[in-house]
Image (cartoon, rainbow, N blue to C red; front, top):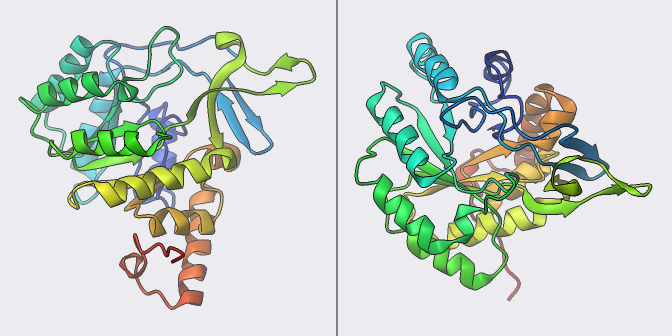
Length: 295
């Protein structure tokens, strides 16, 4: 288990908190080339069944996270961490990835193709032609382990089309899913966040069925060497169990981590272990991807 990008990862202090918890690893805040302030506040709100946010990619810039990770891998050479990044344009994406390629970073890089909360910027992963072109260009020079963060897809044909593209490239993982874009939450007669007149990404319990569907759809379609990170609606050990049952190799915690703090990792891990004991499973491989269907 690990944090989802965007939660408990803005600063070195937050990342250290996740690193020293029961989490297996962490991912940094999705970094742009330079520092970004992000959208005006309030831009995040906890709501009864999850959260709504329109953060706008606030982050401390690539160098801040890369420098920390380079230092950390010397101190803890036996652990692997994730660097999340995105360009505000295809050109910036290549600039950032080339900088990582030329560095001594030995961890996993996550290219975020799914930020739904930057005004005027569409989600790249919904444009299959652009996604294909960017990945084609990236793998001309990028030789380090690379995965992609995906938005939720909702149509079977889109699972087919996306998987056909991803299978062309030596991706290490896909991360399913980012928040469901452009939801609206109302209290009394008002929206609860300022950016985009209240439209924001939905996370938490609301999105678990969508997240599970995406994890399993890609588990069915992707080359076996492309692993899947399951993200969305993980509040309990049972939720983590279901993500793994659908095919996830790792599970990320977002809204619950924001609400509960890093103690959530210990609690969810223990709950998952209890379920495995009850069912007689000794390892995750005993049930990973082994979802049952009704004949």
